[in-house]
Image (tube, rainbow, N blue to C red; front, side, top):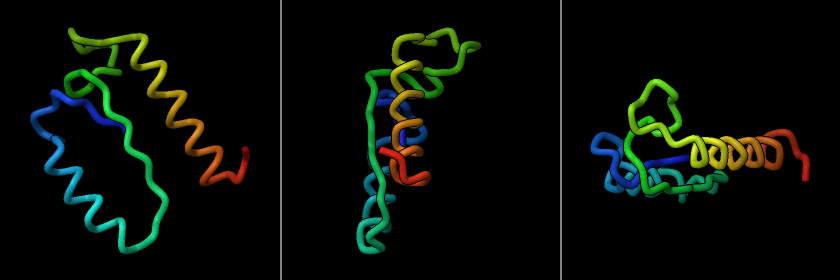
Length: 72
């Protein structure tokens, strides 16, 4: 998952609860945090951050390729 440190809706407590559920299931997951607000990768957001959005997209695509498509 890709998350924003300054997100007041999907915050660390929410994600920590998610991890508590996922960890015992032994499912693959990856957490990446950005010093940003909710929807930082949305170009219509006044706090849009192009560099972080590109990095987040690359991170997500790498996870998908490796863990869902079996690519290295």
